[in-house]
Length: 176
Image (tube, rainbow, N blue to C red; front, side, top):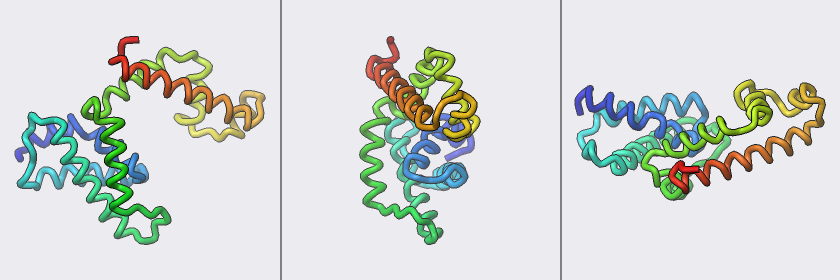
């Protein structure tokens, strides 16, 4: 593999490899490192699939990243989360069934962006407080003059509506 092919591979698959590693349970820093390691291993590999076969290339990269995650977890035996190869195989089956339908999951990302932009401002602000600004429910409750349980319920309803919106858009091919 040459550098140009590697650059194309990174541009096309970096986000989906990172998301896949996070889905498997890697923390943020480990997922970032393992994503880089995945592309380094791909660059060194003599058995790279055809660049025109996107699903095969994506599955190949997921296999590399899954193996790197297993090795990483074995090295960190102090890790309280126990993940074995059987768990990762089941996770791969779910990932393939749920997200690979649009080859790399980008359809879900685009649907999420569209749903977030169509969401009422108040709901979006609440999500921003929780996820972008990492505010606790207690902090949010104080800001909103609500109880933490009220915030929890409101966030649950917002996430449910958001998930429904994303699924509708993905299943409808984005035409809603």
